[in-house]
Image (cartoon, helix red, strand yellow):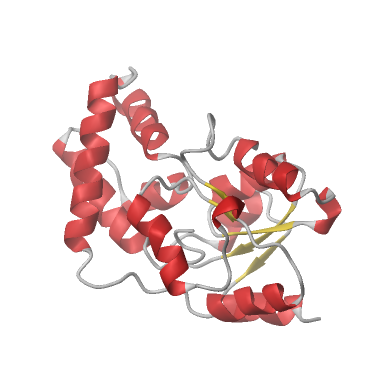
Length: 212
């Protein structure tokens, strides 16, 4: 969702960097983009292990994630813009008869609710896999496997659209074709190394490919 449907990652990066710093955890914008797709809890626990060599307590996870969410909303002066060209991609795949699923590590209910407001004819509530639905988030294959299993389709009938290395790894580990669209500050090589079948520089480029 973040970085594929909504252009929300710059604000997430600022919020994570500021709140992690408050708790003595160095965390850059690139760290945010590299960790994109993890649940908030997983991001915090990973940072604690990498920097402090210990796991975060449940209280620390709860506190830091609450602070990060509050800071994100403080930065959110207006509605979150969509990724340029994604509406056209969604409309095309919908017209082609594809099922359209959201597979996200997000647990922010405001963003989940905004899907129906921004894309009212595209998504269905029972075709969403979020942080509330999985035990293991990306890069584990569980999120994409859950979507695939519930779809009732064969794997060769499915493809994933991702923008983050962990999401790419998750989709590939689930045995699915993954198209990566580089909408952030990472490099094409970051996405290729994660295993993307193809990397596109924009949603428009992806749409041209899908129309072939």
